[in-house]
Image (tube, rainbow, N blue to C red):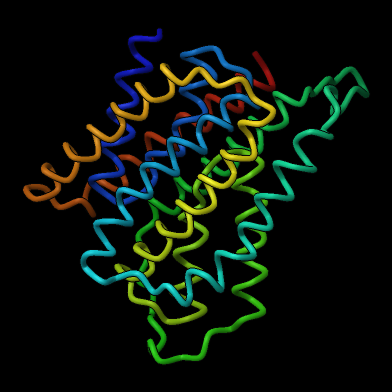
Length: 262
């Protein structure tokens, strides 16, 4: 199972390299079901993998001058506070048993995985659905209230379950500020890299980190990113996005079934 887990590390990177996102949402299920880590440890390690992977993507987009740093910090600073809130206050104070009524027992481990699975299903839907967004003018003044509230929400979720949240950030930047898709994706990756790495720095204080394992897994994901970038030059990544969406949908459904009924 661990060998399959390392194969998935490369697959995660390939997805990121091909379509610029979506792959990292598989990290937590891989850590939990193939490497048998508990949910708290899995989300902490996922923050590192997501943070490093997003940083690599950010460097590429920074060279192309596609990152809007002003918007990134307007959105990103509240996100950082959200991450701090989740990792410093929410995670440490979650009871081991969340629900224990009517013959139903939901532990902290199960609770976090169910939240993650729901977000996987939403992410899969976004990848499968064909959208035709009407862009606002890029000169539109940023809606600070909505950007700050969205940033805070994304930060809380990032800290809680260790995912990047690009499928929430990108639409927010497109619809609230009129960013073109490439600029929105680039700015989103920069925000995700900040959130995830800060979240990991907090998480490592209360989580035992196997650095040999984590660096090995992350290195394979980075290798996958470069493979994905090479493949993307020959294949239309937009055609592959729904395929990966269906794959993530399947993993999300399996997670829900396993945690609630198996």
